[in-house]
Image (cartoon, rainbow, N blue to C red):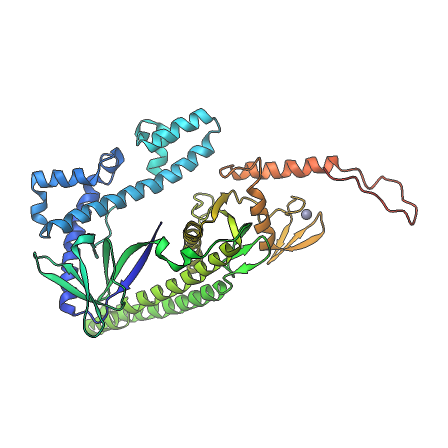
Length: 468
Ligand SMILES: [Zn+2]
């Protein structure tokens, strides 16, 4: 399993940065060309490979107009095709879910799934409709990246202990040397991302090289529920990542305040422009409405949040050999539109990171991650299965008459779903509800009728019939 590492440039000469920006722009045009020509059914959708695109372009001379070195454009074509393929694969995940919802006939399901896998979905009206719905015809938005092949870069440590990474420029044998703020030399294929005068060097290392990979997992089976004030609550009642609530609230307040101030400044700038004071408008826009500081603050917040989430997942895996969780990569479409409020966006992003951390940490440390259907796990009582009432962080079961911690109750329900014979991962919501109701109804009719039993003499205990 691979994990991404990022190194940053430090005090990079503006001339070098400008040269890299120029190269990235040219490569961006190549990306656009790839998306334009091969980003749909006729290209990647029919199984076209990046090597075929390269050969075609070499034959018809398309590559001459790019103005970059051969290795650079070839790597860019490969990268763009991989990006398109990932896009296609994500759409197929949604389409597979739709297939599971549509039919329970195993033969029909198998037919559709293999048509999807072999890119033969165009001929099937249902699959074609699903793919059209989920595979948005994309376009390239990347104009600030350079992909460098593993054998095209090298790094040297100077006498003051500073690491310099040399990458190809636009001319042969004229490398651009980038000072990095780390002492670990990036290895393998590099992705340089140019942001605000700084170069981010993204590269992948094998997760077995990470210290955390040597940490063994536990031996329990643990259910987890994602939360808002903590990252995860487990079925033993323990909470992990309790700093999450504060991080999210702080960031949300900061963003609201910042957006308010920016809106005010923008209106001042607009008024100045309207009154003919273009110098003032320009000054405000470039000094007060820039994006450099904003983007760096956002990146810092994301880094803190990732640390909180990954640490929480490590705590769970410390005791778990099997982690049972809701599939957090699944997003609900249709039903209600959830708006674009700041809190909503932060929560969605956190959910994605939690899904990533669960998969990554489990894979690294050897625990199994089991995804279950989480429908109604927060509304049903884990002891009797009946629907209860949720009141803040409390869950009241009206038939047991007991109050549970709502998230602990949900985590236990999630754990129990792992062995549930009737509720599968893709069982639709309304069916899950029906199953849960049928179970409690059946249960009720099997119980002896307590109310009509004769009053027991004092001193004698009522012996309840053992529940099936
Ligand atoms: Zn109950």
